Image (cartoon, rainbow, N blue to C red; front, side, top):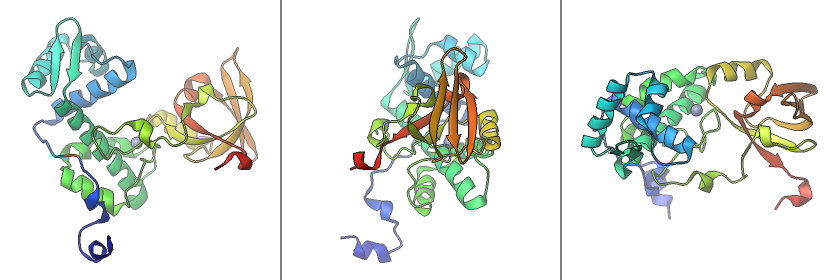
Length: 252
Ligand SMILES: [Zn+2]
């Protein structure tokens, strides 16, 4: 069915639905859209208060208030006094478009330009704001439609895509992992200091290890891999996401 397409110029991504371009915003506004998306995600509630944004950006209450009003006028969000902001469908599309571009650039920089995983965030942060949906799609196809960025975070394809659809292994935080079991690292929080720290411990995405100790009193988890044991603090274990490795007979 794709035979004729394959010889044509069009990439194979053609039959996949792709996020639309809606470049109605500037960089400052886009940073707010991403922040609201991220904060509402983390809080699991929907609304993000102006106070949360003041803390997040270290902006004044007045600056935040003005930006929120501006985004409301552009139908990016709905603001309710005392309750906070809720992204509209348009706002969510924008957020996902930016996150998608960000993670595609990160993948490009590491895979094609030899960047280290701790070096790509700032570059991607700049590039995402300059990237049309067309460019993002071309780059994505060029990279072979990658599922995750170098930090193991999913690259969204559809704006309404549920992350759980992509999570085929049931990721959990390393801090929730059990002693005696085997896990593989599938994701890390994109935090430069953390990534550099992990480099020093030879911990990277897809590394598999066994939990040999979980000290709940001192909040330390000890991993064994590649002939070494490494103890991580609870604060670090909170920022690593793993999938359990099951015995061969359990595999389908
Ligand atoms: Zn990333």
